Length: 163
Image 1 (tube, rainbow, N blue to C red):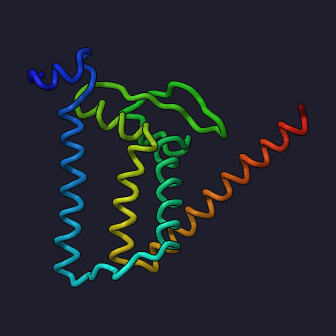
Image 2: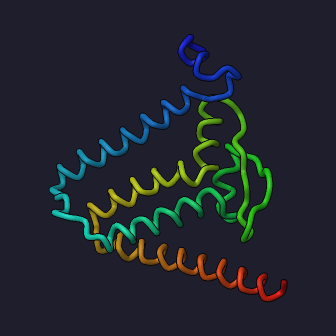
C-alpha cells in the first residue's frame, strides 16, 4: 500500500486500487458510448423534460434496489458478497468479501446508492440512443417503484390497525 493510501485507511481494508479500477471502467464505458454514439450519428436531446428526469430517477432507484437487495439477483452478487441478514420486504443485506478488486465490486453490488450511479449512467446512455424505448423501460421500473411504496403503505396501515 502506498504511503498516501496508508494514511487514508489505517486498517488497510479499503480497496482503493479496486475502486480506481471500477471508476476507470465507468469512465471508459461512458467515453466509449460517447465515441460510438457520435460515429453513428446519435444526437443529444435538446432538453430532458422534467417528466423524463422523474422516470429516469424512479427507474434508477428501482434498478439499484433490484441489483443490490433482491433475493432473485443474489446469484450476481454471490461471488463478491456474503449474506449478512434479511431486511424489510424480503430484501437481503449482503456484505462485501475478499480483498482488492473483489472487495471493491462487493462494495459496489451491495450498496444501492453506489449502484444507482451505474444504473443512471446506463439509463442516460440508453435515453440518448433510444429515448422511446428507455421511457417505456423506465415507466415499467417506475410502476414497480410505486407498487413498492403502496406495499409499504399497506403494511404500515395494517400494523397501525393491529396496535
